[in-house]
Image (cartoon, rainbow, N blue to C red):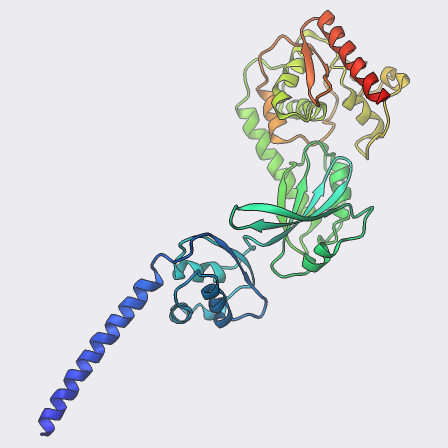
Length: 384
C-alpha cells in the first residue's frame, strides 16, 4: 500500500512540476507579448510611488492585462527597486517588459508638462504646455511675460513637480547679450557668466535643462552646436562666394537673419547681398546700422535718424562697402546655409512688400516702383 501511495505522490509531483513549468512559460510569454493598449498614453509615476500603485494605474488605463504579472516579472528581473518618478510616454501595444524598462530606466520625462523659457528678440516669455499623447502635440496651458505679469497658477502648480520638464528656447536673431541677460533671469539655472560670448557664436535652438544647470555650461553647449552647424555648412558651400572664411560667412548669415523672418526668402536675400558684394556695392541694411548704435544690448525702439544713416561707423553699411566687422546677431542654421548656398539671381534690391516679406528687383527703376508701393501701404496703414 505504501508503495502505491508513494507512486501516486510521485505522479502528482511530476504533474505539479509540469504545471508549474507551463505556468512559468505562459507568464514569460505573456510578459513579453504585445499589450492591449490601443493608443499611447502618458503615465505619471509620482515621487514615492511603488510598483503596486503603478501596476494598478496601468491596469485601469488598459495598458496591461495583469498587474500581478507585471509585479512578478519586475521582481524576477530585480527591477522593483528601480522605479523612477516622472511622466513617461507608453506607446500603443507596449509589452509589460517594455513598460518595466520605461518606468525604471530613468532620465528625463518623455511626456506630461513642460515649461519653456523663450528668449526672444524683444522679451523673455514663459510657456507652460502639456503633451497630448493621442496626437503627440503640445497643448498650451499658460503663457506670460515674467517681467510684466504675475506667474499664473498653471505655472506655479507645476514648477516644482518632479516630473516637469524644462526647456530653454533661443529665438533666431537674438544677440549674445540678450541670451546672457535672459539666462540670468531664469532662476532655474545656477552660476554666473564671466563674459558675453562673441556675437554670432551661439546656436539659437531649443535646449533641455534641469534645475541647477550652470549657465556657463549651457553657453558652452550653444557655442559647440553653432561651431558644428557652421563647419558643416562651410564644408558644403557653393563655389565662387565673396566670403573668404567661416567667420565672414557667419557675419553674412547674421545680416540675412535680421533682414527677413520669412523662411522662403532667406536664399533670395542672401543672393542680393552676395551680388552686391561681388559688384562692390554697399549692402545698405538697416539692422547693421541699428547694431552699431545698440551693440546688441536691447532693441532700438524707434526708426533710424538721417544722421545715423550718414554716420561713419564700422556697422553703417550705407557708408562702408563691405561686411560688418562682426555678426550682428546669432543666426540660425537656415540663414547660415542660405549664406553659403544662396539662390542664383540677378537681384540687387529688395524692400518690404506689406505682407511681412519683400519685393525684389534687378534694376533701380523696378526698385523705386517697389518702394513707392511700400510707401503707399505705409500711408494707408497710418491713416487707418
